[in-house]
Image (tube, rainbow, N blue to C red; front, side):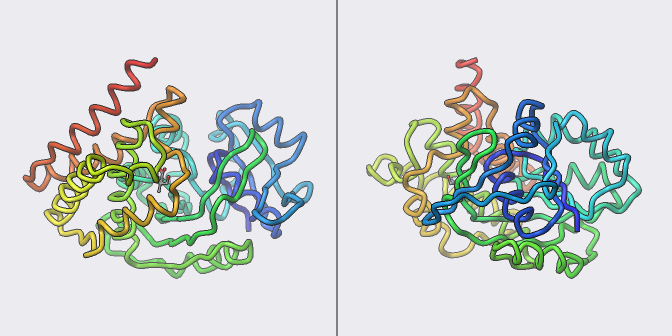
Length: 319
Ligand code: KPL
Protein backbone atom coordinates (compact mmCIF):
# COMPACT_ATOMS: atom_id res chain seq x y z
CA UNK A 1 0.00 0.00 0.00
CA UNK A 2 1.17 3.51 -0.71
CA UNK A 3 -0.01 6.38 1.47
CA UNK A 4 0.54 10.05 0.81
CA UNK A 5 0.60 12.00 4.04
CA UNK A 6 0.01 15.66 3.38
CA UNK A 7 1.41 17.79 6.18
CA UNK A 8 4.63 17.17 8.07
CA UNK A 9 3.62 18.76 11.36
CA UNK A 10 3.77 16.67 14.51
CA UNK A 11 0.81 14.40 13.66
CA UNK A 12 1.91 13.95 10.03
CA UNK A 13 5.42 12.99 11.15
CA UNK A 14 4.07 10.57 13.78
CA UNK A 15 1.90 8.72 11.24
CA UNK A 16 4.64 8.81 8.60
CA UNK A 17 7.32 7.43 10.92
CA UNK A 18 5.26 4.54 12.29
CA UNK A 19 3.74 3.60 8.92
CA UNK A 20 7.06 3.68 7.07
CA UNK A 21 8.82 1.78 9.88
CA UNK A 22 6.19 -0.97 9.62
CA UNK A 23 6.68 -1.42 5.88
CA UNK A 24 4.19 0.91 4.20
CA UNK A 25 5.42 3.07 1.36
CA UNK A 26 4.94 6.68 2.47
CA UNK A 27 5.29 9.99 0.67
CA UNK A 28 5.33 12.87 3.10
CA UNK A 29 4.38 16.31 1.78
CA UNK A 30 6.04 19.18 3.59
CA UNK A 31 5.27 22.87 3.78
CA UNK A 32 8.82 23.83 2.76
CA UNK A 33 11.56 22.43 0.54
CA UNK A 34 13.95 22.95 3.47
CA UNK A 35 11.96 20.37 5.47
CA UNK A 36 11.67 17.83 2.63
CA UNK A 37 15.40 18.15 1.90
CA UNK A 38 16.24 17.71 5.59
CA UNK A 39 14.02 14.63 5.87
CA UNK A 40 15.42 13.02 2.72
CA UNK A 41 19.01 13.73 3.74
CA UNK A 42 18.97 13.05 7.49
CA UNK A 43 15.88 10.85 7.98
CA UNK A 44 12.81 11.08 10.19
CA UNK A 45 13.15 10.26 13.89
CA UNK A 46 10.29 9.34 16.21
CA UNK A 47 10.88 9.33 19.96
CA UNK A 48 8.63 6.96 21.89
CA UNK A 49 8.35 7.40 25.67
CA UNK A 50 10.46 4.86 27.54
CA UNK A 51 12.47 3.84 24.44
CA UNK A 52 16.09 4.99 24.42
CA UNK A 53 16.46 4.69 20.62
CA UNK A 54 14.22 6.64 18.23
CA UNK A 55 12.13 4.82 15.60
CA UNK A 56 13.77 5.41 12.23
CA UNK A 57 12.08 4.26 9.00
CA UNK A 58 14.27 2.23 6.67
CA UNK A 59 15.84 4.02 3.72
CA UNK A 60 13.54 4.25 0.74
CA UNK A 61 10.27 3.61 2.63
CA UNK A 62 9.72 7.29 3.18
CA UNK A 63 10.19 10.00 0.58
CA UNK A 64 9.56 13.64 1.43
CA UNK A 65 8.46 16.30 -1.08
CA UNK A 66 7.60 19.98 -0.87
CA UNK A 67 3.89 20.61 -1.12
CA UNK A 68 4.40 22.92 -4.09
CA UNK A 69 5.12 19.77 -6.17
CA UNK A 70 1.95 18.01 -5.02
CA UNK A 71 -0.20 18.74 -8.06
CA UNK A 72 2.56 17.93 -10.55
CA UNK A 73 3.47 14.60 -8.94
CA UNK A 74 -0.15 13.48 -8.58
CA UNK A 75 -0.36 13.21 -12.33
CA UNK A 76 2.15 10.34 -12.06
CA UNK A 77 -0.55 8.16 -10.44
CA UNK A 78 -2.50 8.60 -7.25
CA UNK A 79 -1.70 6.72 -4.05
CA UNK A 80 -3.98 4.16 -2.39
CA UNK A 81 -4.78 6.69 0.29
CA UNK A 82 -4.20 10.37 0.91
CA UNK A 83 -4.05 11.28 4.57
CA UNK A 84 -4.61 15.00 5.06
CA UNK A 85 -2.76 16.04 8.21
CA UNK A 86 -2.60 19.77 7.56
CA UNK A 87 -4.46 22.46 9.44
CA UNK A 88 -7.76 23.75 8.09
CA UNK A 89 -6.29 27.02 6.80
CA UNK A 90 -3.59 25.24 4.78
CA UNK A 91 -6.16 22.80 3.40
CA UNK A 92 -8.48 25.58 2.25
CA UNK A 93 -5.78 27.97 1.04
CA UNK A 94 -3.06 25.76 -0.47
CA UNK A 95 -4.58 22.37 -1.20
CA UNK A 96 -8.13 22.88 -2.42
CA UNK A 97 -6.89 23.67 -5.92
CA UNK A 98 -4.26 20.89 -6.33
CA UNK A 99 -6.62 18.31 -4.82
CA UNK A 100 -9.35 19.17 -7.33
CA UNK A 101 -7.05 17.73 -10.00
CA UNK A 102 -7.92 14.32 -8.60
CA UNK A 103 -11.49 14.77 -9.80
CA UNK A 104 -12.62 11.74 -11.72
CA UNK A 105 -10.21 9.16 -10.37
CA UNK A 106 -12.12 7.89 -7.32
CA UNK A 107 -9.30 8.72 -4.95
CA UNK A 108 -9.59 7.88 -1.23
CA UNK A 109 -8.92 10.75 1.13
CA UNK A 110 -8.82 10.68 4.94
CA UNK A 111 -9.18 14.02 6.73
CA UNK A 112 -7.66 14.48 10.16
CA UNK A 113 -8.66 18.11 10.66
CA UNK A 114 -10.22 19.59 13.78
CA UNK A 115 -13.40 21.58 13.27
CA UNK A 116 -15.79 21.55 10.36
CA UNK A 117 -16.44 22.81 6.86
CA UNK A 118 -13.55 21.04 5.12
CA UNK A 119 -15.41 17.85 4.21
CA UNK A 120 -18.21 19.74 2.47
CA UNK A 121 -15.58 21.79 0.61
CA UNK A 122 -13.73 18.64 -0.51
CA UNK A 123 -16.96 16.89 -1.50
CA UNK A 124 -17.75 19.81 -3.80
CA UNK A 125 -14.31 19.69 -5.41
CA UNK A 126 -14.03 15.91 -5.54
CA UNK A 127 -17.56 14.65 -6.17
CA UNK A 128 -16.43 11.10 -6.95
CA UNK A 129 -13.78 10.74 -4.23
CA UNK A 130 -14.21 8.41 -1.27
CA UNK A 131 -13.97 10.89 1.58
CA UNK A 132 -13.29 9.66 5.09
CA UNK A 133 -13.05 11.62 8.29
CA UNK A 134 -10.74 10.57 11.08
CA UNK A 135 -10.73 11.61 14.69
CA UNK A 136 -7.59 10.86 16.62
CA UNK A 137 -6.53 11.30 20.19
CA UNK A 138 -2.88 10.39 19.44
CA UNK A 139 -0.63 13.07 20.91
CA UNK A 140 2.54 14.23 19.16
CA UNK A 141 4.95 17.06 19.73
CA UNK A 142 7.34 18.26 17.04
CA UNK A 143 10.95 18.72 18.14
CA UNK A 144 12.49 19.85 14.89
CA UNK A 145 11.85 19.59 11.15
CA UNK A 146 12.71 15.89 11.24
CA UNK A 147 12.02 14.86 14.84
CA UNK A 148 8.77 14.15 16.66
CA UNK A 149 7.87 12.82 20.10
CA UNK A 150 4.90 10.50 20.58
CA UNK A 151 3.50 12.42 23.53
CA UNK A 152 0.44 10.31 24.25
CA UNK A 153 -0.99 7.05 22.96
CA UNK A 154 -4.56 7.46 21.75
CA UNK A 155 -7.16 6.01 19.41
CA UNK A 156 -8.04 6.80 15.83
CA UNK A 157 -11.56 6.41 14.47
CA UNK A 158 -12.24 6.49 10.76
CA UNK A 159 -15.58 6.69 8.98
CA UNK A 160 -16.91 7.63 5.62
CA UNK A 161 -18.26 11.12 5.13
CA UNK A 162 -21.33 10.69 3.02
CA UNK A 163 -21.98 14.37 2.34
CA UNK A 164 -25.70 13.59 2.21
CA UNK A 165 -25.34 10.81 -0.37
CA UNK A 166 -26.26 8.06 2.09
CA UNK A 167 -23.59 5.79 0.55
CA UNK A 168 -21.62 3.60 2.91
CA UNK A 169 -18.22 2.36 1.87
CA UNK A 170 -16.80 2.23 5.38
CA UNK A 171 -15.62 -1.34 4.85
CA UNK A 172 -13.33 -0.09 2.07
CA UNK A 173 -11.26 1.36 4.88
CA UNK A 174 -10.52 -2.07 6.38
CA UNK A 175 -7.14 -2.42 4.58
CA UNK A 176 -6.18 1.03 5.85
CA UNK A 177 -7.27 0.10 9.36
CA UNK A 178 -5.08 -3.03 9.18
CA UNK A 179 -2.06 -1.07 8.03
CA UNK A 180 -2.55 1.49 10.81
CA UNK A 181 -2.94 -1.28 13.39
CA UNK A 182 0.23 -2.95 12.09
CA UNK A 183 1.97 0.39 12.58
CA UNK A 184 0.87 0.36 16.23
CA UNK A 185 -2.10 2.73 16.08
CA UNK A 186 -5.27 1.59 17.82
CA UNK A 187 -7.76 2.16 15.01
CA UNK A 188 -11.49 1.63 14.67
CA UNK A 189 -14.03 2.08 11.91
CA UNK A 190 -17.17 3.97 12.78
CA UNK A 191 -20.35 4.76 10.93
CA UNK A 192 -20.96 7.59 13.37
CA UNK A 193 -17.83 9.52 12.66
CA UNK A 194 -19.83 12.75 12.25
CA UNK A 195 -20.87 12.52 15.88
CA UNK A 196 -17.25 11.93 16.92
CA UNK A 197 -16.14 14.95 14.89
CA UNK A 198 -18.75 17.19 16.50
CA UNK A 199 -17.87 15.93 19.95
CA UNK A 200 -14.20 16.71 19.35
CA UNK A 201 -15.21 20.09 17.90
CA UNK A 202 -17.04 20.85 21.13
CA UNK A 203 -13.93 20.10 23.21
CA UNK A 204 -11.81 22.27 20.92
CA UNK A 205 -14.44 25.04 20.89
CA UNK A 206 -14.08 25.44 24.64
CA UNK A 207 -10.41 24.70 25.34
CA UNK A 208 -8.72 26.23 22.31
CA UNK A 209 -10.02 29.83 22.25
CA UNK A 210 -9.91 30.23 26.04
CA UNK A 211 -6.33 28.97 26.33
CA UNK A 212 -5.40 31.28 23.44
CA UNK A 213 -7.11 34.31 24.99
CA UNK A 214 -5.70 33.76 28.48
CA UNK A 215 -2.39 32.30 27.24
CA UNK A 216 -2.54 29.37 29.61
CA UNK A 217 -1.87 25.66 29.29
CA UNK A 218 -4.88 23.36 29.03
CA UNK A 219 -4.77 22.31 32.69
CA UNK A 220 -4.68 25.91 33.90
CA UNK A 221 -8.21 26.44 32.62
CA UNK A 222 -9.36 24.52 35.68
CA UNK A 223 -7.50 26.80 38.09
CA UNK A 224 -10.15 29.39 38.87
CA UNK A 225 -13.90 29.72 39.18
CA UNK A 226 -13.89 32.57 36.65
CA UNK A 227 -12.25 30.37 34.00
CA UNK A 228 -14.49 27.42 34.81
CA UNK A 229 -17.56 29.62 34.53
CA UNK A 230 -16.52 30.94 31.10
CA UNK A 231 -15.84 27.35 29.98
CA UNK A 232 -19.28 26.24 31.17
CA UNK A 233 -21.01 29.09 29.31
CA UNK A 234 -19.20 28.27 26.06
CA UNK A 235 -19.87 24.57 26.54
CA UNK A 236 -23.61 25.09 27.18
CA UNK A 237 -24.00 27.35 24.14
CA UNK A 238 -22.13 24.90 21.90
CA UNK A 239 -24.16 21.92 23.12
CA UNK A 240 -27.35 23.92 22.41
CA UNK A 241 -26.17 24.76 18.89
CA UNK A 242 -25.36 21.13 18.12
CA UNK A 243 -28.74 20.01 19.52
CA UNK A 244 -30.51 22.59 17.31
CA UNK A 245 -28.93 20.82 14.32
CA UNK A 246 -29.92 17.37 15.58
CA UNK A 247 -26.41 16.48 16.77
CA UNK A 248 -26.19 14.74 20.12
CA UNK A 249 -23.21 16.06 22.06
CA UNK A 250 -23.74 13.37 24.72
CA UNK A 251 -24.82 13.81 28.34
CA UNK A 252 -21.25 14.04 29.54
CA UNK A 253 -20.03 16.90 27.33
CA UNK A 254 -18.81 18.98 30.28
CA UNK A 255 -17.10 16.02 31.96
CA UNK A 256 -15.30 15.17 28.70
CA UNK A 257 -13.97 18.71 28.38
CA UNK A 258 -12.68 18.70 31.95
CA UNK A 259 -11.12 15.25 31.41
CA UNK A 260 -9.26 16.51 28.31
CA UNK A 261 -7.98 19.52 30.28
CA UNK A 262 -6.65 17.11 32.90
CA UNK A 263 -5.16 14.54 30.53
CA UNK A 264 -3.47 17.25 28.44
CA UNK A 265 -2.82 19.60 31.35
CA UNK A 266 0.73 20.47 30.27
CA UNK A 267 -0.19 21.01 26.61
CA UNK A 268 -0.12 24.31 24.86
CA UNK A 269 -3.29 24.03 22.76
CA UNK A 270 -2.82 24.19 19.02
CA UNK A 271 -4.66 27.52 18.95
CA UNK A 272 -2.45 29.09 21.59
CA UNK A 273 0.62 27.74 19.77
CA UNK A 274 -0.62 29.39 16.56
CA UNK A 275 -1.31 32.70 18.32
CA UNK A 276 2.12 32.69 19.96
CA UNK A 277 3.77 31.99 16.59
CA UNK A 278 1.70 34.75 14.90
CA UNK A 279 0.06 32.15 12.62
CA UNK A 280 -3.53 32.05 11.46
CA UNK A 281 -5.55 29.85 13.81
CA UNK A 282 -8.33 27.32 13.15
CA UNK A 283 -10.89 29.35 15.14
CA UNK A 284 -12.92 30.07 12.03
CA UNK A 285 -13.45 26.33 11.45
CA UNK A 286 -14.18 25.56 15.10
CA UNK A 287 -16.10 28.36 16.88
CA UNK A 288 -16.84 30.04 13.55
CA UNK A 289 -18.29 26.78 12.25
CA UNK A 290 -20.50 26.44 15.33
CA UNK A 291 -21.70 30.03 14.81
CA UNK A 292 -22.50 29.19 11.17
CA UNK A 293 -24.40 26.06 12.27
CA UNK A 294 -26.35 28.23 14.72
CA UNK A 295 -27.26 30.64 11.97
CA UNK A 296 -28.45 27.82 9.72
CA UNK A 297 -30.74 26.50 12.45
CA UNK A 298 -31.98 29.92 13.63
CA UNK A 299 -30.18 29.74 17.00
CA UNK A 300 -28.12 32.43 18.70
CA UNK A 301 -24.35 31.98 19.13
CA UNK A 302 -23.01 35.16 20.78
CA UNK A 303 -20.24 33.41 22.69
CA UNK A 304 -18.90 31.42 19.75
CA UNK A 305 -19.03 34.51 17.58
CA UNK A 306 -17.22 36.50 20.24
CA UNK A 307 -14.58 33.77 20.74
CA UNK A 308 -13.99 33.73 16.97
CA UNK A 309 -13.57 37.49 16.79
CA UNK A 310 -11.36 37.71 19.88
CA UNK A 311 -8.93 35.10 18.58
CA UNK A 312 -8.93 36.47 15.02
CA UNK A 313 -8.33 39.95 16.44
CA UNK A 314 -5.31 38.78 18.41
CA UNK A 315 -3.56 37.63 15.27
CA UNK A 316 -4.41 40.81 13.39
CA UNK A 317 -2.80 42.78 16.22
CA UNK A 318 0.35 40.66 16.43
CA UNK A 319 1.23 40.53 12.75
O1 KPL B 1 -6.88 19.11 20.22
C1 KPL B 1 -6.38 19.88 21.01
C2 KPL B 1 -5.69 21.06 20.45
O2 KPL B 1 -4.84 21.64 21.11
O3 KPL B 1 -6.02 21.41 19.30
C3 KPL B 1 -6.55 19.66 22.49
C4 KPL B 1 -7.43 18.45 22.73
C5 KPL B 1 -7.17 20.87 23.15
C6 KPL B 1 -5.25 19.30 23.14
O4 KPL B 1 -4.36 20.36 23.26
